[in-house]
Amino acid sequence: MKIKNRELSYAEVMALPQEKHMQPKRPDLFFRTLLTVLGAPDLKATDFSLETEGMEKLGRGEPALFLMNHSSFIDLKIAGSVLYPRPFNIICTSDGFVGKKGLMRNLGCIPTRKFITDTTLVRDMIYAVRTLHDSILMYPEASYTFDGTATPLPDSLGKLLKLLNVPVVMIRTDGAFLRDPLYNMLQLRKVKVSAAMRYILSPEEIREKSPAELNDIPKELFTFDNFRSQQEKGIRVTELFRADGLNRVLYKCPQCGTEGQMLGKGTRLSCACCGKSWELTETGFLKADDGVDIFDHIPDWYAWERDCVRKELLDGTYRLDVPVLVRMLVDSKCLYTVGEGRLTHGLEGFHLTGCGGQLDYVHTPSMSYSLYSDYYWYELGDMICIGDSRALYYCFPLEGGDIVAKTRLAAEELYKIKKPR
Image 1: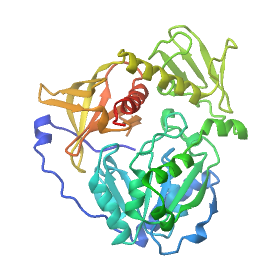
Image 2: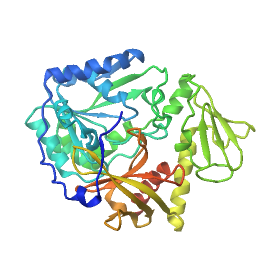
Image 3: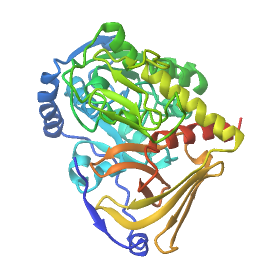
Image 4: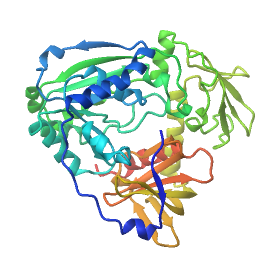
């Protein structure tokens, strides 16, 4: 999938008029059917199946909030199938509207900017359930998982459940990550995919509980480990490209400690600095050639990298400083390439400069509890996105190796360190 792109100067982009806000639109039956039909081939190819629990409690025409874990692009196809013909609005990232605003609105999509306080989004969701009487599909993790485990949920989720005051249903997928992990560059594997849909909260239960108590329920349910599940069930991923790009997640060698020298290719992961290498087995284990695995489980390795980043933050040694190509989003017409800049990240947050001195943007640690970052984003490259309600800055590193995962870990840990108690 690609995105419409245009070159403009920074000044020209900032002079563009801001788009007028449009309230959510109920998708009519044609577009609901279209979403279902377009997703059918992939669901058939994965032998998709669904289990339900407590769904008899939800009335046919009763609006609800559907919370779904986010593993790969097939998630939306699953939702389109299991919710049909129920009308629902989809919370999606604003860059998804670029070049196709009309289609996205007709599909019921509501745009938002990831990990940025968005009061307009809350008003749009309230309008959807109370005025349109639509359900809402929301991915509370907001970004795809890097290592196959759950990503942070916003602390404001409990307050949102209170405001909406509609039944809450969870849709949890199994196999979607193994079929198309983000690091693997859109190469699909032959894996069965299934989902479980469970009614978890009624409006009465929501009114009885505090926002903090409501926060805990989704957080507990959004705890999973796709690689562990694969290992326990003996699911085999036999494709010979299964380790391609794994260095994007496992960027730091646990033997020599070098960063940015890992290479995932074929079925193997290796360190160019010390020479240690591993095989990613068909059942999802890492097996070292020398018999000393250190980590044989990818999420354990990723958790160690998180601990390393947190230590760097606490002792003041963490620092990101890289040249980047900057693209901007200010409307749904186009993504605008404005030139090169420099992105730094440290204890005071992000600082992006460039475009002949015109661009100077600061993003403090408390502004975002996580970071919108992605691999092979719209086939343009690995990127880091920061910004505010006026503009989003998509930064594509020009050097420095695999820094996207570490930067996201650093942003999440820095938020925990800096946020007020």
